[in-house]
Image 1 (cartoon, rainbow, N blue to C red):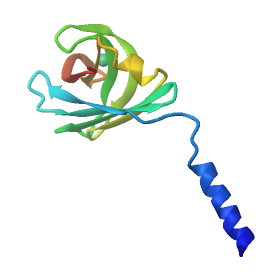
Image 2: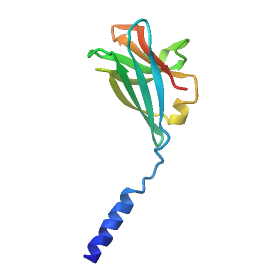
Image 3: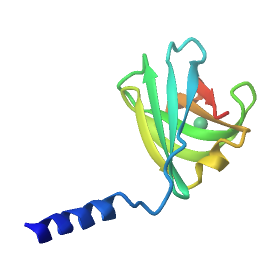
Image 4: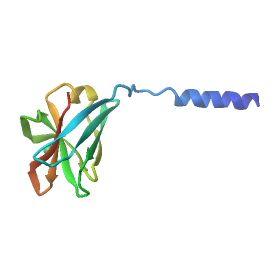
Length: 130
Ligand SMILES: [Cu+2]
């Protein structure tokens, strides 16, 4: 009985000692563009040197909407994507980006969502990462 308790304690200690500090997530608003009515949030969750980027949009269609992180701001976006994101489907997208959260939130980056793969020029939603 005693040895069993020690083993359990050791197992709990191993689980509760993560190597990386994954605290300090951030959430930013995503606004509608070009009358799409789509809006929501983008959550950034640090994973060591990477970041999980989660988009949640209300009013989004079930069809795939391409999404990226671009340089610039929603008012003045560089049309060339900086980091590709998983396309938004039914308002949801999750991507692990190969950059730390401090880089993604340093300013001058924005998440944008495009109407479709065949209509990338039409932006339906955008959120500044600052
Ligand atoms: Cu884009």
